[in-house]
Length: 80
Image 1 (cartoon, rainbow, N blue to C red):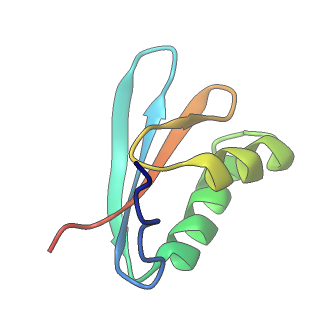
Image 2: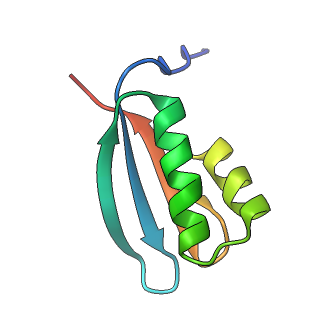
């Protein structure tokens, strides 16, 4: 059974996980998937992640966290 892809135009949540400790932080909402991805890439780079790894993690991020190196990111549509 196939599932429809989430609507990229609806608001999206972003949160991060520090992989070594398992702690989640910085949950926030953005107006759409593109804005959420831009924020996530910038934040991962600010946290010291390699830009290439940050971009790859953000592309894969969904309800399940996608790992960069020391941090993981989730990006998913909000439920209304």
